[in-house]
Length: 484
Ligand code: NAD
Ligand code: 6OD
Image (cartoon, rainbow, N blue to C red; front, side, top):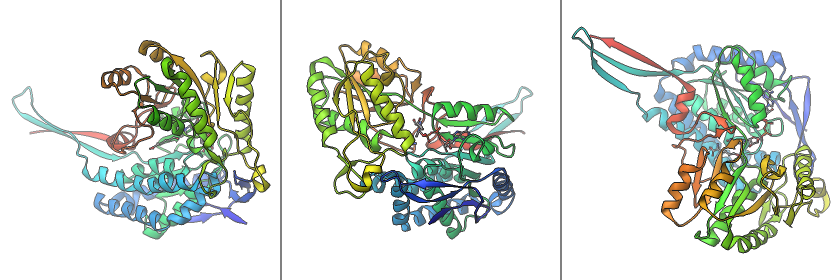
């Protein structure tokens, strides 16, 4: 039996309290996760605070950058171990994890090492009222001990997206991975140790949210800032915890993203793009599309084409040749998604395809698989059009004018991402200005340049990370004014 241990002050730490980690493809137990209690969280915070004062705190940027490159290289050297761990925890297709999750896990260290090395601070010179001169300049210092609270959908990618810049800026971190996906954060502890990241700089505590490691960590007075990716409701709870001590937060939260297809779009590319945005990672991508709006002249043709794509997705475990749709993360999440499938029918949806559970054979009959599902015919007030489902499903509605689709797309409390398909450049710019989101993809989706700002508007988040924007959260910018 595999054991997933906490990683505190450079040591793997077992506890008496364990919970099962189960594989989504067949619901079999992968191993036991050692849950951190208050004592382990206290120890991790103590170690992280001590590391700030030790070798890490004194280290030159050049040396820090070298170490972060070594972390990336070691992840790549152990690519197969990380891939196996991520596949076991999530059940996602091997092709997806090997092209996105693991390479990005390594890239997140190199990109932010480069940014920290190369991005300057500001400097101004000015005349003083008494006829003298003053020069001012900015100095960045680390925020301190950063709590990194992660979800389960892209475990290594989303964790390193925060740990990479946090360490590049000279902070120490305590990671609380999702209880569903403990493996890659634990494995990263081995990498940190191997390449010589000082003890206490990278710590991992396992467990749940309320009354467990998540709550103990976010409420801990020794934590200087909290960066969190997950549900909007969890963000509200964490924000309340962060209020004590007025600690900063960076939040990447939920969404109910619109995909918009104009009649002038390149039809085949739009169908392929929306297929990805609706069904990739079994719909468990925060940037994914659950509301599709298609201009009326191509509506019927588009619905038929998306139906064909959805039905063409091979459902199965990570290593099945040609697999396109893996399982949902857990039995609990499957029940939630199937609950929405039932609600859609009850609210009068026309089920274009799917709506249930695929017929799986053998051990996979116990997996958390659901069908890719498309609905039409619902009003904009229906539950499945309003609420985040986080499954492989979408509702498609027709529209006539730009103004109409802008109003529909913006009629949500969320504001994370959109994908818009048009060949009219003027329209693309108008739409990008009018849509209330943090991320607007035109004729593309989930195309990433890590130097750019990433984050959500409205209920989808607070702050931006990526490029220089990560430095805004992970450092304190001090202004020094010298009069001479
Ligand atoms: P979740 O909010 O349930 O859990 C996320 C993490 O928070 C887990 O580690 C969990 O244990 C922890 N947690 C839960 N309650 C807590 C508490 N009270 N205090 C401290 N920690 C607590 O989210 P999830 O189900 O793991 O992930 C899916 C959600 O994440 C979706 O809503 C999705 O849209 C969102 N998400 C957003 C982004 C983004 O970039 N905006 C990216 C990925 C996922
Ligand atoms: O690509 C990223 O940096 C990122 N944060 C992706 C988020 C995906 C959400 O599921």
